[in-house]
Amino acid sequence: MELESPGLKFYADKLSKGEPFSFIRYGNGEWDCIMNLYHRTRSGSQKFTPDLRKALKDSLVKKRAGPYYLALQSPDFLKRVKLLPKLEKWLKNNAPGRDWYNGEVFARASRHGQMFPLVSAMKQHRVVVVGPPWLMKLPFASVFVPITKRNCWTNVDAIEKQLRDLKGVVISFSAGPATKVLIHRLHPIIGKHSWLIDFGSVWDPYCGVKSRHYHGRITPAVQRRNLRGK
Image (cartoon, rainbow, N blue to C red; front, side, top):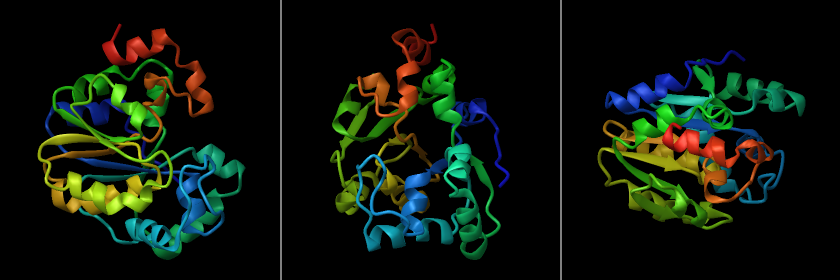
């Protein structure tokens, strides 16, 4: 599966130039749900239900127009756990002809202290953060839309309602599998003037939560470099 890898600057430049886009990452949790391989995310944050499974499938089967970037998260891991061949077959049968992007671009930049160009570009706009309570600590958040720590899919309609009337904003999503459905739903409504970006767990260590193994490598010095450029 070939992935487009335009790099962090590609996305930062679009933010700086006022060119809206949507970016959605699909990782092992989403594929486990789509193909009914497991009953919840491996972190335990979301139980898989038939309506979530259908909505995730629809987010891939029903194509969106415009700058709408589908991204594959952790392809090496997906290959290692033998998910990659299964998802490639599923896509071939259900959602062929899509361009796929590298879903590790933000996590990699954060890990290596190279995130500041994107953070700086985001700060040029009003930033709305959709995520668990600890993300309220993010210094660049203008508005915070809280989700429950577990099973936020239950509240997906209410979350969407809070976002659908926003204009000209950057929405940073950290809401697990529900993120994919929210961006898919909102892109035709506000995607022409707003940025809808799936950051997943990227911001957790900046708020004192190390929810992924690599977060331990993001030292206070690396955090300062990513948030302040020095």
